[in-house]
Figure 1 (tube, rainbow, N blue to C red):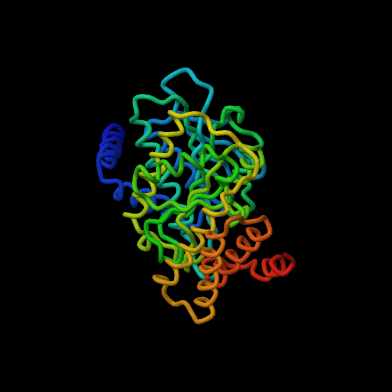
Figure 2 (cartoon, one colour):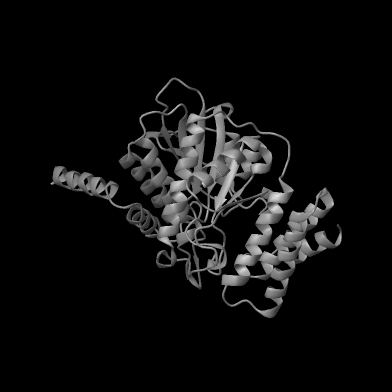
Length: 377
């Protein structure tokens, strides 16, 4: 009986591996949200971590934690860590991370977090499957499912302080968080990449992958989003990083963040680009962590484009939100055309962008604090 069951599971995994990417992505999103709210240290969170370790095993990855696939956290919960070795002798590796925890439940219902962040976990698993089939890898890859992102980034910050492999070997960290829809559901197919201001080499790699796949990837400094995801601990350790996301929407952190709202075609496109970026990082020169050098003119062009796209396609915007977006579009165009964009002008653009996106409902909180910052500039 047990032998037949194991055979059925193996056959099922093989069939899934041969399915289209959209089918695999949907299966993994539905597989993760089936555990419920996955709050840090809960039974559903622990069950989800076990499921993720099993998925890593099915793909053929090796355990990369302190206890098999697991890295227990000091108080409760655990990260899930898998290793794909290089095909040549090398101490260098790349980290691909996505948090699997979410917000649990309350009187409104269960917060399943299909986009935040089952979509990122599904993309990580898809990349693992693709890269495990490569015959040449100059670097290894560590795949990490982070726990407790929704609770102060506890899982990733613990990993960055106590990594399961020497962090000196980490060439880059890619953070996947919220990849299954788009900003206000108005920019399908657009991917945002934050953090290139700290590494011109990694920024160039992102641009190269976007060009090769004819994809729209808008690069902005991490200041535009702040310490909102698992890249933070690695940035503090001066590891080159890219925070990759498709942006937030009206269902962000609500009980309506459901699998049926995911844009699986767009998610598959993002996953293809991330796999291409990873392949380049595995084969190319190691990017350096440099000083803070944002491309302010590129940022201004991208800000103008974001405002334009939201004005054209976002639904339910009121008169105030539209006026804010038109002002932001003009600011971006003006700064993009400026011969020189000083630090003060750029700082105002960063804060004004944050305020405008808050007012359109793609984020929550922080508005009053940001307005005080803007008034002080």
